[in-house]
Length: 205
Image 1 (tube, rainbow, N blue to C red):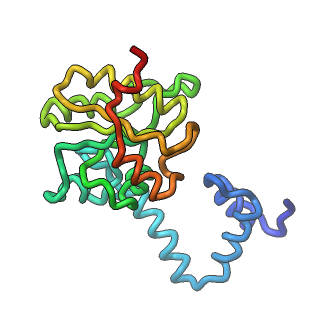
Image 2 (cartoon, rainbow, N blue to C red):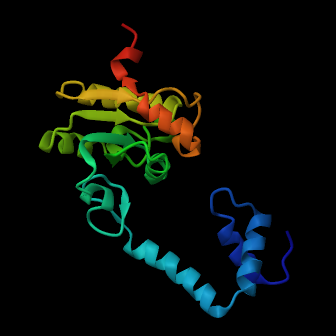
């Protein structure tokens, strides 16, 4: 792609670094920004800077939050005896959109993936164990993507949590193997949570 301006080329290159944004889409976004009023562009850039500088991770569940404790963890109407374990914030948003789950969450920050050099110590697993020790829930739901990394992480978590006096369940496989939680439609995801099953049932005896 040839550019008449180095400034334009640099801006397009930065936008193209975003996931799912190719050079042509990046160019359209940059040209659109150029058409906007200065105030609109300033609002856009300041919102990104504010996000980067001021976003926090909830001290309880590790979800992204404006404050030290997120709104879900602070909500007394939520079922704090049920913890849904997810990969990242996108999965929290996907499950919340189903309006079928009313417990709290724990965000791991990824999945175990030896191929990518991601081990248990790189995730918020130790924090989860300490959280359960301090305030034991009745149930933990393992709501991770139906792929090799998700299954590996589920099995590891089961081994870490099986000696606690709690129920360990997984979401029903309404989601095809290889599918990711964030891309599941709301009805399928909601039903998968409602029809969750004990994880032990999936183990080979």
